[in-house]
Structure formats: structure tokens, C-alpha cells
Image 1 (cartoon, rainbow, N blue to C red):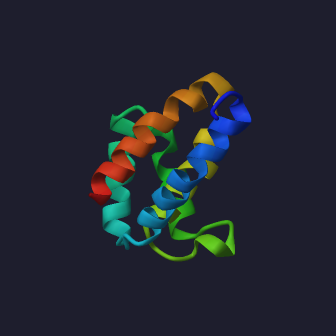
Image 2 (cartoon, one colour; image 1 turned 90 degrees about the horizontal axis):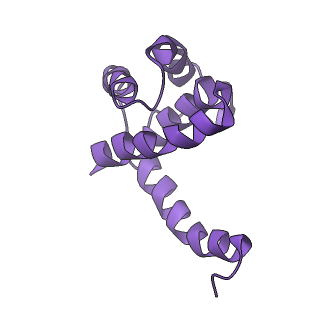
Length: 107
């Protein structure tokens, strides 16, 4: 058990599912989403130049599945409008502060 990368991934799936469900259950106002987006930039999860694109993606999601106003939608907005535009190394570094800000704010 846990001998391969695939095993490690499979073991993490229940935790990831719980993580996203917790984010989906936390509704957000537009004002709170804007504040959290600034917090994401301050934490180094996204460049400050990406604050407006992330807020716009939260307000008008590119995907129907993310039209609810919750922390999951903000997470998806940040990854879609910012993290996916970063180099692979920078993107990998962004997920820790992204998770810390959004999960920490949800607790």
C-alpha cells in the first residue's frame, strides 16, 4: 500500500473529495470573494496582477458547474484565471497557499 504514485493518489482521493465538498458548502458573497482574492495574492498563491481576472472569473464563471457562489467556485476561478497560466513549477508552489487561504477561511 502506498508503493507507487498511483497508490498515493488513490489514497488521497477521499481527502480531496472531502476538501472540495467543504469548499462547496461555504457560500461566498462577491465582497468576501474579492477580499479572499486579495488574501490569495498576499499569500503568494497568485500574482497581484491576476486579482482582477480571478474576481471576474468568480463573478462570471466560464463553466456552468461553477455558477454557485462558494469557496469552491473561487478556488476554480483562481486556478482557471491564474494558476493555469503559471509555469509548472510556480503552479505547484501556488497550491499550498491557495489551499491554506481558502480552507483556513472556511474553518
